Amino acid sequence: MITRSDLPLRVINSSPEAVAKAKKRARLSFRQIRTENIFNKTLILMGLIMVVLVVGIFLTLVVQSLPSIKALGPKYLWGKVWDPVQDIYGAWPFLLGTLLSSFLALIISIPFSISVAIFLGEYHPAGWLPNLLKNAVELIAAVPSVIFGFWGLAVLVPIVRTFESHIGVAPVGVGIFSSSLILAIMIIPYAASLGRSMINLVPSHLKEAAYGLGATRWEVIRSVVLPYTKSGLFAGILLSLGRALGETMAVTMVIGNTSLIPKNIFAPGNTMASVIANEFTEADKPVYLSALIELGLVLFLVTVVINMIGKKIIDRFTND
Amino acid sequence: MNIDSVKFRLGKNRGFQILIYVLAFACVVPLLAILLFIIKAGITKINWHFLVNIPKPVGETGGGIANALVGSIIIILVASVIAIPIGILAGVYLSENRKSKLAYWTRLSTDILQGVPSIVIGIVAYFWLVKPLRGFSALSGSVALAIMMLPIVVRSTEETLKLLPPSLEEAALALGMPFHRVIFKVVIPVGIGGILSGVMLSIARITGETAPLLFTAFGNPYLSFKLTKPMQSLPLLIFNYATSPYNDWHDLAWGASLILLVWVLFLNIFTKIITRKWKVQL
Image 1 (cartoon, chains in turn red, green):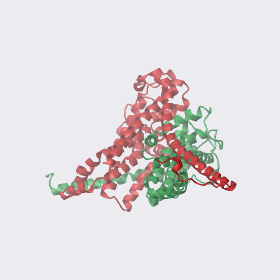
Image 2 (cartoon, rainbow over the protein chains, first blue to last red; image 1 turned 180 degrees about the horizontal axis):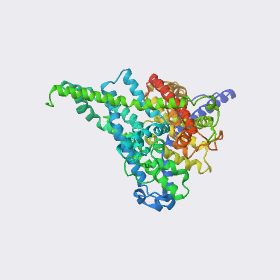
Image 3 (tube, chains in turn yellow, green; image 1 turned 90 degrees about the vertical axis):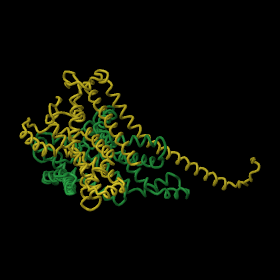
Image 4 (cartoon, each protein chain N blue to C red; image 1 turned 120 degrees about the vertical axis):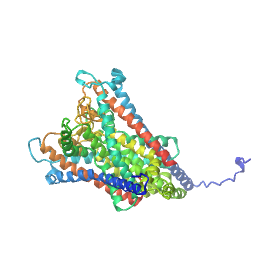
C-alpha cells in the first residue's frame, strides 16, 4: 500500500515569481477546462434543440387544436359538410381530396420513377447521358413548388380543360386531376433516386447466375432485380407519398379550392394543406381556427408515420 | 406463337428496354417545358426598372419587384444566421457521439423535421412568434424558414464529418489541443466543402418556400426593412400575383419566377459541382 508519505516529495520553489507563474498556469488550465465543459454542453444543447423543436411542434399543434377536438369530437374527421359561416365543420372533403390527389399522383408517377431507377441502376449506371438524366431528375426536386403551381395554372390547366371537354366532363380545368398531374411531376425524383441506389445494391452474383441460366436482361430485371429491391422501391414510393400529402402551394393554385366533396377526379376540391393555406388568415372564430389546426395535426402525424416506416425499411434494407 | 421461344423472349426484352428508355427520358420533358416556358415568359419583363422599383397599383403598367428581392434577402439572411450555427454544431454533436441516447433522439428528430409539411411549420411559427408579438413579422418568417433549414444542415454536416478519418482528430487531440479548438481548427475546416454544400442546398430550398411565409412574413406591397413588420418575399409575390386576375401582375410574377428559378437552379448546380469534388453523399 502506498501512503502519502511514500510519494517523493516535490520541493516547491516558493519565490514570488515562481508562485505567480504557477498560479497563472493553473488559472489557464482551469479556464481551458471550463471552456471545454461549456463547449461540450453547447454541443449537447444543440442536439437537444432538435428534439425540443419536434416535441414543441407536436405539442403546439395538440394544444391549439384542443378547442376543436373538445367541441367537435372525432366525428369531425368524417363530417361531410364544411361551412364555417354556419359553424359546421367536417373534414371529410379535405381528407378525400388529399387522398385522391396524392394516390392519383402516385399512380401516375410510379411507372416513370421506376423506369428512371431501372435505367440508371441497371441499364446504364455510368456515362454522360445517364448522368445528365440523373441530374435533370434531381433538378425537378429543386424547382420551387410555387413555380410548379404558376406553370400549372398557365400551361397545364388549359390543356386539362381541352382534354376534359373532349371526354365530356365539365371543362373546369382546375381540379383534383390537374393537381395530381403537377404532384406526379414533383414527386418523381424522390422514388427515382432512392430506387436507383437500391438497385445498385443488388449483388451481381445473383444477376450473373440468372444470366448464366440463359435469362434475358428483362427477365433478370423482372425476376431478380425487382423482387430483390421491392421493399426498397416501396420505401421510395412511401417517401414520395409523404411529399405529395404535405405539398401545399402547387396544389393550392390548381385544385380549385371548394369545400364540396369532389364528385369525380376532375372536380375541383381542396386538400388539407390547401384549405389551411387558404383559410388560416381568414379564420375569425376560435373553433374555426382550431379546426384548421387539427387538420395540420393530422397532416403532421400522417407524414411522420409514413416517413418513419419508409426510413425503417431503408435502414433494414441497407444493413442486410 | 410459343411464348417460350427464344425469339419471343428476345423481342419482349427489346420491347421493355425501349419502354423503360422512353419512360425514363419522358421525365425530363416537364422540367424542360417549365424551364423554357418561364424563360420565355419572364425574360422580356426583366430590366433595370423591374429590379429597383416596387409594384405599381392595379391599372398602372410597369413597376418592379424590389420589395420582394430585398425582403427575400433579409428573411433568408436572418434564417441562415439562426440555423447555420445550430445546425453545424448539432451535426458535430451527432458525428462525435454516434452511440449516445440523445444522439439517437436527435437523429430521429432530424428525420422527422425533414418530413414535416412546410405549411405545418408555418402554423407553428404563427403561434410561437406572430401571436405573442401581435402581428405578422419578417422575423417570424425567418424562424419558420430556419426550422426548415436545420435538418438539411445537420444531416450534411454529420454525413461529411463521418467521412473524415478519425486519425485526423486523434492526432490533433494527442498534440494537446483542446477539444473545441480541434473542432473549429481541424474538423470543420477539413469538412467545410461538404458542410457548405449542405448550407447552400438548404438556402436553395427555403428560397422557394411559400407556405411557411403565408402566416408569418405575410407579404407587403411596399419596401420594408423592419424585421418586426410584414415583409414581401419572392415566392409570396409570385403566389399572390399569379392568383390575381390582372395581367400586369401576372407579368411581374413571371419575371419574379424567372429570377427565383435561376437563383435556385444556380445554387443546386453549384452545390452538385462542390459535392462531386468532395465526394459527399447528401
